[in-house]
Length: 241
Length: 312
Image 1 (cartoon, rainbow over the protein chains, first blue to last red):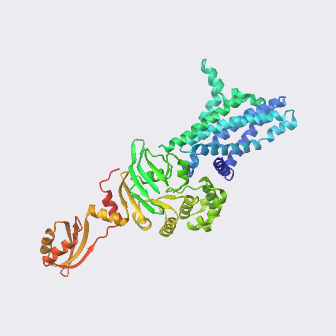
Image 2 (cartoon, one colour):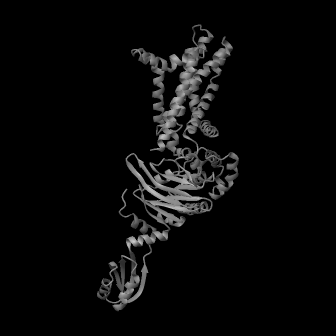
Image 3 (cartoon, each protein chain N blue to C red):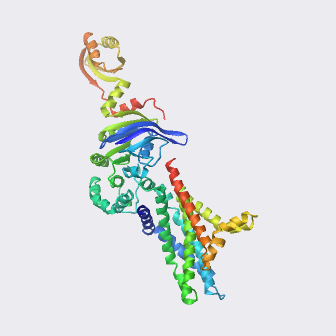
């Protein structure tokens, strides 16, 4: 655990001590604010709970994008700058390296979430919503972002440069997001399969409304675990090159 | 201390090294020599635990790379040709991080830091950001990261590449001081560098060891393979000298360089060390032997002699 935290702390420091992490957060906050204004704050009267639901709908997407962009550097940048040998020649296992990197991206994601609290805070002050809906919404966002970060960690582990890692990560995440559309144009039993794996419409939707379903938690947990396992295997495979 | 047996590594179908077997004693400074593609870097990467060999065993103090890779790697310090540095960190922050990454506690690393900074002669840049340092200082920080956790073995891949002459001299001092506390492996294609700093040399060509030993041993081996070359200054006529040379069976070639004031300067190649017979034959023929100088087997000559014919 000590090794995981060590890697996570350094990588998190690299995000916040350079312009990189702040550029991502600033752009994401701007996008989040504009989307909240455009989708959530309208002239049509709405229930506060619906406004919060709209917020989490758009905020979930922005968080996924943040996850992909932050993870592209995790391993690909280390390879580009030649610092990967520091990690590979250390006594840490590949699993510990992957977990450390994943955790650093999750820490940045948590920081981003903290900075967006003002938006549900505004709904809380001006409307009638419960703290539980906010908490469950953020829990769902973090779960979905965790899955996105795990995807990005994997694509970064198999890519030689950051751009390629980001493009691959975006393609995989977009696939999971768009699965509900694919489900509409496919026949049984594939349509139900695609519906089940859809990040947004199937797995994330209950969180937007303040509901926690075990199956959704297990789903995002499984996707996270699966892609982190793939990333670990990718690192191990490189030692056999 | 380090034992390597039958080390073989393939990149896909391409063989990088095959059947390397050698051992290294404690506190030795070993030079790994070879042309580009000889297998130097692959050998060092395997020794550093970065690659898992296709076949063979590697042990440090009995700890096997295959069965205890984490413990094996904690005993190694590795500096690749391009120093792996986080340029946004200060030297101290970086070394503290690497020391802990290699398994030491923060307190241990902090206690060892002054000694490492002193050994690598980087005390005065300890609080500077790495990205702002010159290439020479970055190399030294690279060495510092390789020794911060007190490894048993330090592996330096081309440590002097890109350094200016002053930095090279300073780097030699650093490497020699490392040899007092740990075993050092240096890869280089700069032969004089290996000659200056190393106790023993491993020569690789085509992924195999073609020679191993002290520089003087290798010179003997090169002599056995390439023969002895002497330059003589003789008094006498050319025909008589040629006749005398023909009578010595070990003479394989002779080259008359110049003739001044009655003296002949001749470069003579012998298939074996038959210098006494050569002088006797010349004196018997009435030729005056003014001077005989053996061409010293420079490491460059030894290397070329021993690697001749080896294919990658």
